[in-house]
Image 1 (cartoon, helix red, strand yellow):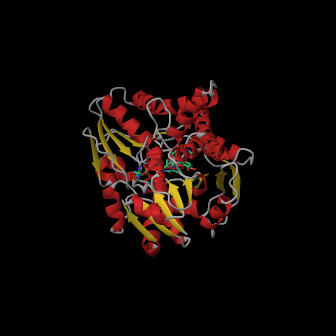
Image 2 (cartoon, rainbow, N blue to C red):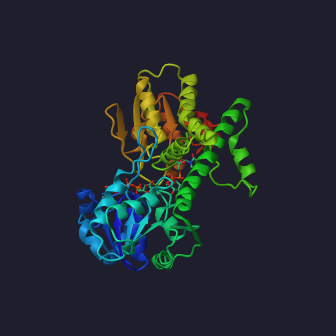
Image 3 (cartoon, rainbow, N blue to C red):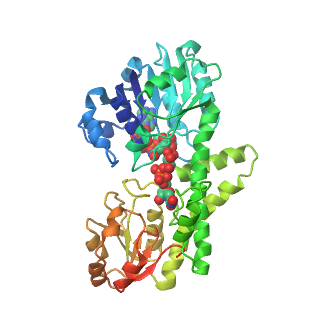
Length: 425
Ligand SMILES: NC(=O)c1ccc[n+]([C@@H]2O[C@H](COP(=O)([O-])OP(=O)(O)OC[C@H]3O[C@@H](n4cnc5c(N)ncnc54)[C@H](O)[C@@H]3O)[C@@H](O)[C@H]2O)c1
Ligand SMILES: O=c1ccn([C@@H]2O[C@H](COP(=O)(O)OP(=O)(O)O[C@H]3O[C@H](CO)[C@@H](O)[C@H](O)[C@H]3O)[C@@H](O)[C@H]2O)c(=O)[nH]1
């Protein structure tokens, strides 16, 4: 199949590479000329394990360009993977999706299956159908399909190759697109969940909202555990054995971040409120998450009451390990609070970069730790599990290790004469 993927971000680029691997001819377009230039030169613009290797291996099936007209003209299938960031009131900003539809409408001369991979609010795909009709695209020339994406950053390639399901939302009378979708994903072993356009949109929001709620639930449990000196890790292990609860997404910590959970929660809350509903549970999930960083600031100031001119080392900038993405990263939120309180902030991350004039980012952990009054683990990178705590103790000025991800072994840390403070333990 000839596919045009619009948007070369996390989802667009990963989808392009996977569909090229499945044997399709993919033309990935983006309006960001710098991004496209780098991709044409064979370098991947994001850090995503395994992506570059696949890009090189299946290069023959892929091309990158900024020329959307040409890519659309040749394609049977158009996949929209542009961003849907939040507006200040939480509503998803659909300007990029709408812009793409306007462009597509002027270029449809043969039948196109238009697939929305971007996460869009309930009812958006129906509106896109109407937009195309209003722009005088003949009804028989297109079908719109909602095909939300469930990949996680840091394991995007694996997740796309081994999804637990492929959700396909179809227009009411669409008898063709399911076949097209099966051809598109031919070679991937996963059940198809077929529903309406709105159903597919809702599945995506419900999925992210449920996962985010699980995290906030555990963060709330951790707050209670803290009060009673109970270890939240024991609680997670025990309740996780119950298959009705499940062992995933039970890690208490500094809160969830990233480009999806915070934005999708806000968007679903906005959608519900627009329809006179009060989504209490979603609002509580958000509130727990938003106040989670403050818990760590309080823990820190209970040990170091005045942070002014104290050397605080933040280990981890990305919102989770195995990605260089810092969008809505709790680490950045914490850094900004430290800076506000006058601390000298030093940081280190294996992949992510955060440029801020008040923060010194180091290339080596040990440089970041030198003379530190406290070290805060903000991202659970594997690398931090193997740090030389004896050397760290020698190089620090103070002795406080604040493990905001419950990554480290308390006993190991304390054995080296350091003071360990974790989450709900
Ligand atoms: N990042 C994830 O892990 C993830 C997972 C599942 C779903 N999603 C959803 O997928 C969508 C994309 O997310 P992302 O993280 O890949 O976004 P991103 O910001 O990384 O990439 C979006 C790309 O679209 C390009 N773009 C915008 N308008 C364009 C236009 N008119 N023509 C061509 N290119 C255009 C931008 O230049 C950018 O490169 C969002 O709706 C997101 O919610 C993301
Ligand atoms: O037990 C846990 C699990 C995760 N997190 C945090 O939650 C955030 C999100 O993590 P994760 O879901 O692994 O990463 P994303 O790449 O944001 O993926 C989510 O968002 C994507 C975009 O919609 C969806 O496609 C994925 O299915 C969904 O997991 C990160 O800050 C994690 O540190 C926790 O605090 N505790």
